[in-house]
Amino acid sequence: GGGIGLGGGSLLNILAPSSQSVFLLGASGALPVFGYGRWWTILSAGWLHGSLLHIVFNMMWVRDLGPVVADVFGAGRMVIIYTVSGACGFLLSSAAAVYLPPLPLLRGAQLTLGASASIFGLLGALVYYGRRTGSSLVHGQAVRYAVILGIFGLIMPGIDNFGHAGGFFGGYLCSRVLDPLRPERTDHIVMALMCLAAVILSIAASVITGLALFPPR
Image (cartoon, rainbow, N blue to C red; front, side, top):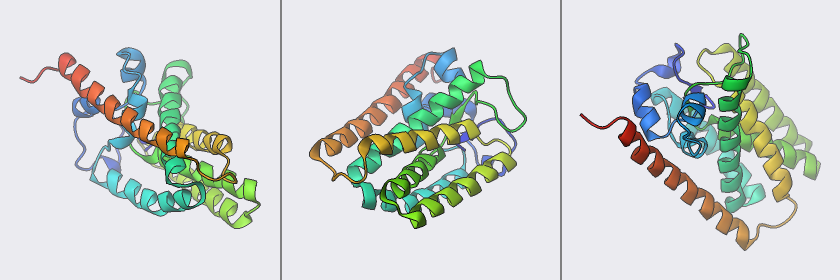
């Protein structure tokens, strides 16, 4: 999911941790963000997964797409796109659950996590790269992947489709700002390191504040 919206019956829930555990570690969604004010979870949730299959599927996509985006944008800008698009996905999903009426196949998540918001962000970046450079091959392949994964998300229960959509458009817009036709700069590397530091701090904040809410027995 955009991860996966926890609580739905899905094959992705095999060996799934408890909702309390993932909340403690930094899952995002309407409940943490709007219910408990844990706004930083839009950064931490992309580094958590809801089950064994969930992490396997997502890491396969990261392994395929990450090097391609790093090759055309540079490693620093790839990290920026990955981080920003994940945050956009979780923010959209959390807001949709609060402010938009639930639709049969499209609803925001109360609790959500996983790397696929960022994976859709990488696809969005490649779609923009294809348009910016005139590479119909890259553009067409990225669009096909996004459509296939989007349809899969609509068919499978428990998938956070708002997270996917937010991640895709976040990656697309982020890549426009970063402009793949310009070379990667030193400040991009600095920004990437700041993104990684923010993620680490967000996970730490989740655990520290979560233990105050759910003290160990």
